[in-house]
Length: 485
Ligand SMILES: Nc1ncnc2c1ncn2[C@@H]1O[C@H](COP(=O)(O)OP(=O)(O)O)[C@@H](O)[C@H]1O
Ligand SMILES: [Mg+2]
Image (tube, rainbow, N blue to C red; front, side):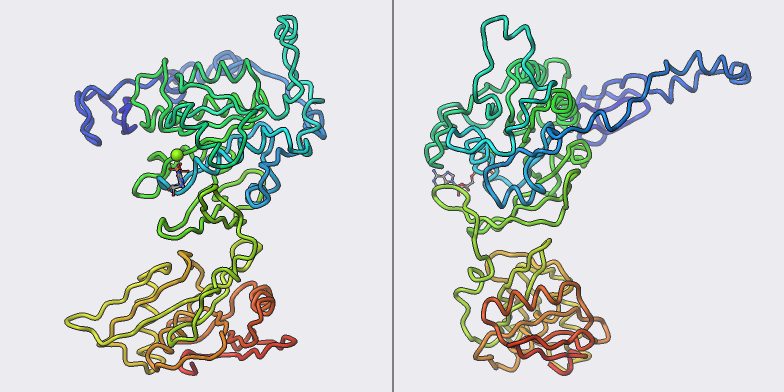
């Protein structure tokens, strides 16, 4: 097989120009694959019985008991120094894991990893989760380095190496200064080819290493441009092997391309142990940190941060913040969005106006536009609202994205309230999924959504009729159909 080193397109014959990406001279032959080798076995030899097969298929190795591999040091996790990030990771970094953090340019990836690196290396930090790591035999510096006079430094469990292909050491030091993080314990490593980086990390054995970003990594061995899928995959493979072999925890930064994938192919996400995504709307200060893949924890935890001049700060009470400036205007309602084990209350606004010309528009910010069209059709057909010649705009406050069907009822209520021009003096919570028949359907985590509303002093809620229940101190109404809105 032949593959393009730039875009990884496969072909069965050599081509001067890659048909996928148009690159010239980028198609090279892949190493022969096992299946190709297997094809060479003649039917006669296959009939030769067991001995022939055994001779050709590799050497037997011994398996080992799993219990031998388990030890207290494997369960202890490396805290990132930030409670929100730790929660998203499932309780901190697992030693020897390779974690990818991805996000759009300028969203705050470098800021977050610098904060984590600064915190892990910081002297002031109590050596909590990492204290046991020294007892793990495999993490001890080799006898050779000790003989060379380099006695293991007392803070070996905090040693952090930062590789930046995007910033110089000077710029990085400025960043640490701005984040009010000393960065004292952080060591800088030039963006050498990945083979050199691996050898250096293996020799220096830090507890934690940051590589910003995977797209800037180069290689001595592989003839491919930085950022190409082949190189990204190759470099990540080397780093994964390094992490597993040495117990170094590696945090890899990945840029997201326009189509939303990390480094082109999804293969990168399959290689690493965990994928964190930092998302948010550049126009808003809020950032959500989510685990989209986690080999060592749940994938639905969310951390809420705010971008400030001094870096990313965890938001203490997100619901209160999202509702802070809510005004009792027509078209404004509150919904409860469940993200992992948490519920956030957010304000949903709608504006309905007579279409100036032609086809009326349905625009949504923070909500799926196709779903909004569907809900408008349901409101027209089942709810008796005349939306045929009306423009409908929906906006979710705070730059949040509502992805659950549980937000349907809030969208419908906001649109209905905007059409009528009526505003509830007090905030009302709306949660429920709306079906094509206009029926309001049950949703998960209703209790938690109601509890969060109650905590913030909301006393009225509208929920699916089948799930309606009484809650102390709250007026909960059940709704069977959007027509009742
Ligand atoms: N000197 C600065 N002062 C205040 N804010 C800054 C400064 N430098 C960067 N930022 C803010 O931090 C944001 C995130 O930057 P960065 O962490 O470098 O993003 P990424 O690494 O995801 O591309 C920027 O969009 C900007 O808003
Ligand atoms: Mg960056």
